[in-house]
Length: 76
Image (cartoon, rainbow, N blue to C red; front, side, top):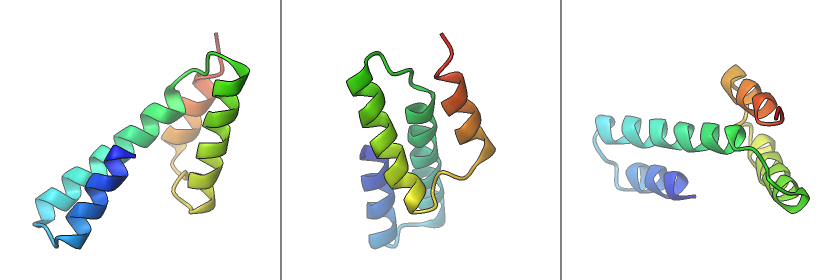
């Protein structure tokens, strides 16, 4: 959520191109970290799935790295 907020600020403030690019990379890194994070309980797994389904519905979960991280997160 912090990365999304940073991206939003960069866009709304019409920040310099480098600020927008950095915020976009930060957002991408945050999403990749969520994909890679191994769920530790059924509730954690359900929360992760709900969140990622919301992101996917917006078309933002579309990189091969996302899918690879998500699949690796399910392996013990």
